[in-house]
Amino acid sequence: MPRIPYPDAEDLTDDVRAAIGRNPANVIRMLAGLSPGVYKGFGAFTNSLFKSSALPATLRELAIVRVGHLCGSAYEVFQHEAFARFIGMPGSQLDAIRIGDPASPEFDEAERAVLAFTDDVVRNVRASDETLAALRQHLDDALVLDLIMVIGAYMTVSRFLETTGVEIDEDAIDWQGFTNEDQD
Image (cartoon, rainbow, N blue to C red; front, side, top):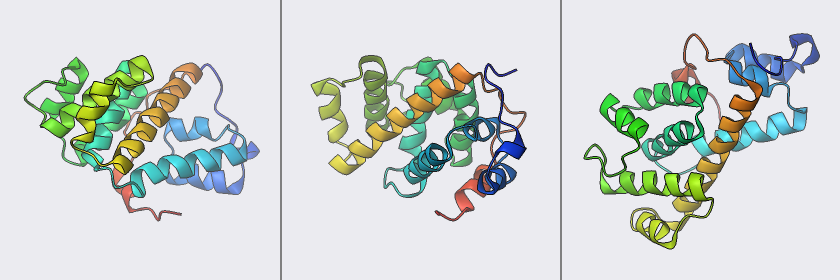
């Protein structure tokens, strides 16, 4: 049972009810309790990280799954490991992310740099000069900035999930449906 109740459907706008109808995941149900403008703005922001950023999906998911582990957010890990599998990430990489070994031979140099950077940002807020320089050897500045936003957004999501007590869904989000939705 969540620590904060999911909002009642009759208290939601038609747009929010429709969004829950398309994606009834518990995280969406809890986010529906946000103020309408915050709900819409946060949704647009996180969708843009998936659908408008040039950051490769594999690097984004490496960071998101690692953030979920570092923040102790079982829900985040459950949903984004499912997405990582959907985009073709092997289970051996997911195991290595869980262990937290960015030097694992499961990763190439760019992936190692993303994981090290993610760990540094989550643990220290300000990544070290060395970690940032290593990442910039693989990503241009726009992608580094996008990665920082991904890490920050999913730190926020993890804290939201854990503080509200969102329950893990029986099934993962329909990632195929999500990736096929319009970008509106």
